Length: 151
Image (cartoon, rainbow, N blue to C red):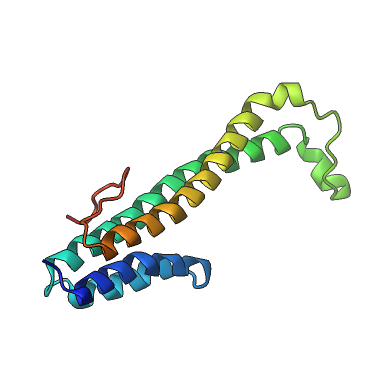
């Protein structure tokens, strides 16, 4: 049976990942600090600290993959129709003769990647809240689709 202190620390470990909206890299720094201070004293806190950190690292990896797909798709679409000598002559980016039908594939892949990224961020928020609620009730929660970096 977990004490209320252990439940609170584990819950705050999950909730501390929400600091990413206020402090850059707060979703990594604060859970690591909370987890590392109590991981040796409580198996419950150790489990939830690893879960929170693994979830954030997994989301980072998924986000990087989606952005690595979206950014080149948009860059290829934009720069495909600009001749190199145009850039040197007048220093203006003029997209003349841009045809959506020629670029529909790249644009679709880029837009789908960005939409998946946005959906991932919304799902992340709700999973963090749900994990915090489960943890405060003393349930050993495990995030779905999480790569176990820390075992």
